Image (cartoon, rainbow, N blue to C red; front, side, top):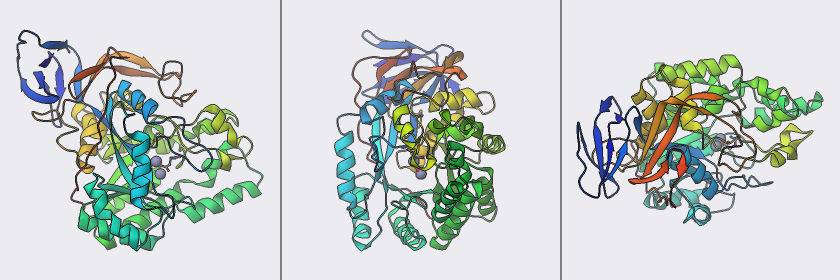
Length: 455
Ligand code: URP
Ligand code: ZN
Ligand code: ZN
């Protein structure tokens, strides 16, 4: 048995000062005092907060974007995740057009199997909707895939509104949640062309080519389609105040809408694009927005309007980013974040939000929405003993020099954040001790269940 003594346990609705006993990888008991017997392992968590292991429900590991492959694969990505307190990730298996969903899944599993240090699962990104793909959906659920994604932008990925609608109708029957990349693809293409015609090829033109209204229009259209289909949808990586307004409007009219945002939209602002050299290292889609957008999204987090915060981790090295030197439209899109999401959010919102609300944003809500609750995302008897121990009195300075992600830069370089993720337990194994990896952790595949997605 392993006993965590004297810690502050962060459950979904309160913080309790109790001891926690772990038997065979599960939380076996929580009580004011649990005394160790001979052979028991004791972790002293006095003054520390014990959170459910964090869940990053939006990663792109070992992803080929058609030109280059992300810097992090499943080994380096999940190592970095674990050291940051993330014990489960959900990556996006992305269908290549002409490919079946089972071929896509086989490809992703071949990349991930046996390489993951934390638990992992996949969403399925559907890019080629047809009758055969529709027929494959039940098999996806049998394989533990209960969440899907479609893109409204990127010519090689996006689906028509009609396809999106038809997919939603199927998912409503099967209990699958659809996440949507909300940018109007036609407007993005026109915006890129217009910037180039004006002689703009620098990284700031990336942001100018796809302003907030391009996101807001797509959010608006998506919510109309979802309402027509009678389905809840999840707006992923929301970046703008204008997009948030669309979600507020729909919610005020009685529609249930889920929304995810990411650390880059809460901690960064678009002055990062000013330097024509360093600016490309911040190119992602949707782009990092203005300070007013950043502040508006941070307020939305505080008011409880955001359901989940994940990373959209899609990492490239400086050399890969330099493929777009002199032409912003050739810069590989995406930012690293898998390692620092928990500390970025805990450090930024500590004191502004109660610890249970932070636990829901970083773990509990994702576990519920993605069919893993209460096995994951909760501190309660019977749940898996995936735990992250946070020291609110320490401090963390983010730097590429000390990170484990395979990128050679960090968008948050030099930021000093309140607190530190000190220890991590994976199925009860004490795999991170005082910030250092111990042993050779092995994550397991997340066999996720269907969820209720009807309006
Ligand atoms: O720039 C980004 N976000 N790249 C990853 C793919 C996506 O759109 O989520
Ligand atoms: Zn996306
Ligand atoms: Zn993404």
